Length: 435
Image (cartoon, rainbow, N blue to C red):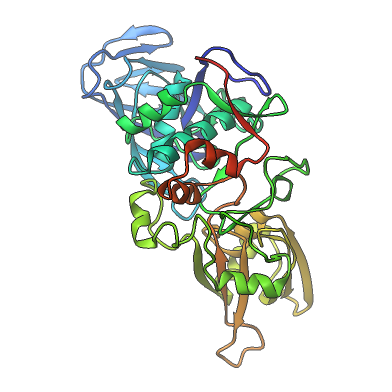
């Protein structure tokens, strides 16, 4: 397991959660056709697997297979091209793009049961993990300088190991968007392997510490500060900064300028000026939706919004009167949202929602793409309350650190790996910490 604020001088081994207790998965189906040297242990005793298709089930809070119960299954195999295929793994937990995919895994796999659901962990060398992350986050079609930049950023975030969300479950990170996307060797390419080799052991450092290098799909044109999104501890390398060659002269904390911003298309690296929307699908990860990432529009009805607020906040609410942003961050993301509403007794009430994440969670059932948005209320009936709300937004994700689509835009425009990384993490520098 990785340790926070520790700088290794040799390549570490890491543990990645592939199936989590929250998935409530009670069956695992594994296709071992492509693994020539597979070894399976039940409670550390070797067992013979007679079929290429292996089915594990949860029974009596243990792993059940072919009439046998066990606390722990360990599967060992060689590195790729050997792999086993795990059927129906969750991708996009809790987000609007959630789906089930097949994942191909090499090296060591552990399977156990917790809370009557499976946990699956893949253990492997750091550099193998990173080669897979680069083309799980985005596609293998991305320019080489971007893939190298993504690899350095992913390595830095991983080794900074600040959040430790899953350490209590016995792994360093999960396979999904709450950490970093990891889909095994599914999309491993010669480019991603070469990018890992070219940047081996390279991380971003700031004042002698590895940078907590978070990133998102699209900043929408201006990057966000760390402290506006997470704990109130400013980071010099994660500030409001225009995602463009020159700074934009605009103040997105002001409602009038924010309204202008979301209805315009400034020439930022993540805009269609650098990467056309019609071409974007070539570069996205396989679980991403094809759509508008730089500027978008979503509608919700009064009923849908009330149902979601009632469900997420357990609030006594019958109608929404208004949605008013009362505080914005430098990227235009909403930090405070005032919701004025009518309760079941017909009384007027209000509640303030704080932080980007909560605003995105509350305003839409499937989690809004970004909180950098303006809100329009629409009345088409005789009701005293709006019939629907229209959200006009900028960007996808929290917007801090590297903007992935912006990074591709920079690479397509001829920027180097170092230029891309240092643009998104000002005051940080690259250093090789192991060979």
